[in-house]
Image (cartoon, rainbow, N blue to C red):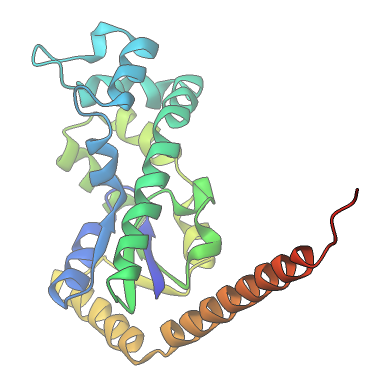
Length: 234
């Protein structure tokens, strides 16, 4: 199995591209959905956020007040780091576990929708190809304001908290321009789907893994055989 990562800037259209992969039968692990799961009431992430940020970040229902928490962390780099320390390890563990389950159930390749792929860097060694969804900065700015109902200052803070989109594009294997019609964006994603379906990388990965397992197994077997022959010392 191999992994294709979909990344980009906030409000550039990553979800639109990920949905194209899903419609073509490709399993998608959505990091944003996992991030919401780990902070549901009663989860350890929720407990840690409550302890670190106080009751003011909770709604009457005890759910995390995401707009309030977001406003706090995007205005304060130190608070953002504190939240990342709580959430990122939990998110990555769930990603690894879900990817493993998809591997053992026979998927040849999957998609990981991860906005902060480059910023965290933790999963880079596991990624085969990177797809960056991009759009003009002005369009990104206006989309973010409209989607999240933010002020211009709030939108600016959120965009600036991420790695510049130009650098993400430079380090990606594919760049999807999402400035035009949705149909054009979807057509670009479909071309990538078709290219990945033709790839034999998943067979190479499985052969490599099988070879590694055989080497480890043979090494353990030889060690057991050698030590079983060691005479008892009186």
